[in-house]
Image (tube, rainbow, N blue to C red; front, side, top):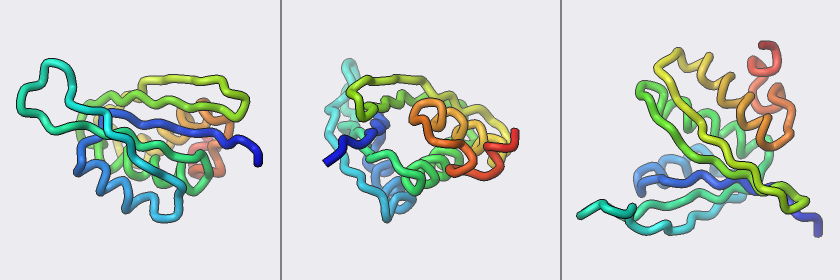
Length: 128
């Protein structure tokens, strides 16, 4: 069996996890407990989403990230483990921009990390 690329999205709350599950109904995804952030008293444990990279999964991630964090300024660490074992990490920044523009930016960022054509993730992302 060929190794698949894996995307890891860290720092999710339980509410994020439940909502992300709605955006990824057909994706191969599981969640790993990360624990309580250091220095956070009374905080709830965070989780990481571990997603097998596919066009369906990346479409769901783009939509989730754009709509979940589109009205705020936010940063998330994303790690991709490629089939050859190399790991690529990037900080994805969400700015207060229109949702369609943000979706295209996210699709291009995920495309850069995974090597998938951005137009397969989001058609508008490939034309800019």
